[in-house]
Length: 172
Length: 125
Image 1 (cartoon, rainbow over the protein chains, first blue to last red):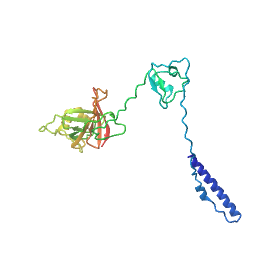
Image 2: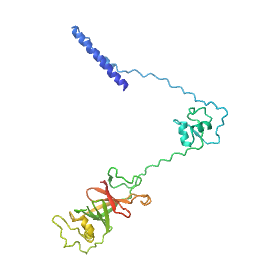
Image 3: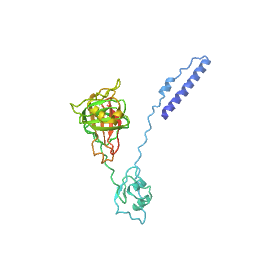
Image 4: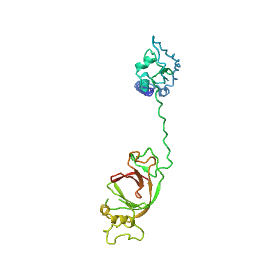
């Protein structure tokens, strides 16, 4: 979007310049200089994007051992996943950031890294399995009006056909 | 609104007020189909047979429904209910769907315990 806007402005400037040059040439009664409008079109930036050198793998941070600290090796461990923070982990395992820092002898709350094993007081329960929506063997014999489906969690029983008589009345 | 029989010996009376009732179908072939003493006004009809017997035997129904707008017509209705645990265990009012038989609409009929049964239009076909 930014590049497109820039191109549009560039065309205007060059076109404006071309008009100016053209009118100037006319006022001087000289042969007009061909206006290189095609240049403008050809001026679409086709420059190859510069190759950004691949980032070198940053060295895994190392935790400076906290002197006189004993990790809670009696606690279970979890492995830090991408996006994890000590605060978020603490919410899952029922511990404060300070407790986790102390239990793992971390220099600070910012020094965890992906793949690191952390001692936690309890392992969070696994997420509940995703229950697939059952495919109903019997379809509803009609289409629900908007918002009138009451039983989205159940399938219908088979349709029962009824031989009936119907009659409309004036009242009711 | 219609009264109807469902072939299982039940007459459903569905009122415009949003409630519905059922009555056992007690009419049998050989019994009078109608009451000749009840003469409908022009353009109206006295219900006959099963619907007519409920209409004649229940003054409140008759008062509420008035005269029929048309002769009764046969249709193949459809009845369907949700599966799963009984509604009483799900703490919800039992209900089922009935093809109204006309106008392509399907009614959801709630069987309200200790109260008037209610209904609403649930969908179309």
